[in-house]
Length: 185
Image 1 (cartoon, one colour):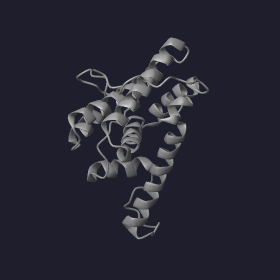
Image 2 (tube, helix red, strand yellow):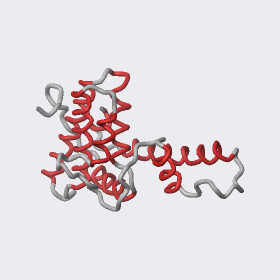
Image 3 (tube, one colour):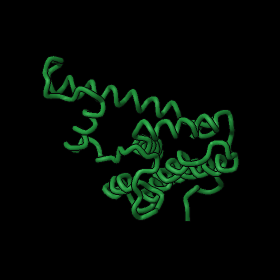
Image 4 (cartoon, one colour):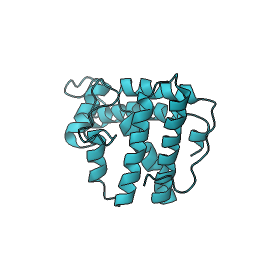
């Protein structure tokens, strides 16, 4: 959880972008034997992601041009992330922790970055969500689950820019880890 104390997680987001780029290269090389002259395979990252959505390589994710995305039940978690979490074999408390961190990240992307009180509240919610994940998953899975939800939540350019703006706004700020497990009651 040290990334929270330093005031940002851009390394994780940049790692996500590199992972997606590597995935696209891997998909292209594996699907056409490395022959770049084949025309029936994805030519762009967007096409590769849509292909992955269709064949089930990744969960089908909302990629509209909004930061919030659809949330029909108003629980603070995008509906596609909710569906993904519901599909996991995890326990109810683990799924609640995943929803908590996704909601915290989504809300942080929506806050006014000039409002210091809102930034502190958003950072505390992310810190609590991360602590909750670490209290409900064993140590070998907690960080990977946390990063996975972050990647799925910040999955478009618009969302990336919003999350980067939030991360820049809190850079250099330190926060206190929550008392207890951080989980919402």
